[in-house]
Length: 200
Image (cartoon, rainbow, N blue to C red; front, top):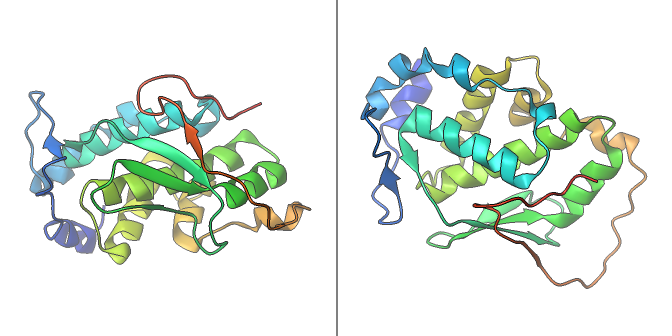
């Protein structure tokens, strides 16, 4: 994690009443990140081993708890047809992460491997989970997503590249047509507590 990012971390607002420090024995503060960073080897995992929204989100939560010593429970995931420039969002003060269903479906259609699909889901959910923890600044959030991805997977991993460069060229391999269809939002049931598979 770079020095500039560590300085930005000091500005993060974790005063939301819905956010709680970890209650385990590790009470390191954000300033202690460099020490905790040494233990991240235990958290490194191949994204291709994760099979659904829940598994990816659980992995994200464990990683963020280890790095920032913060966690949040009770979030739900909603898939909705959003403008194509929006990958997802978290409403300030809400308990929902909303992912753009149209983009997700295009990624699923264009992805050649599970790593491609899971990398996209990982980046979107990590970004919005950080927002839910009180990291409102977009510049800081994007930098944190990149740094966390780089630490976990390395700079050559697709997730890290996606965090740095945005959407991959995965759409060039997709013949997905973005047609305007009226669809109701879809709630991924028990997203934060039980199995919710999206991989077929």
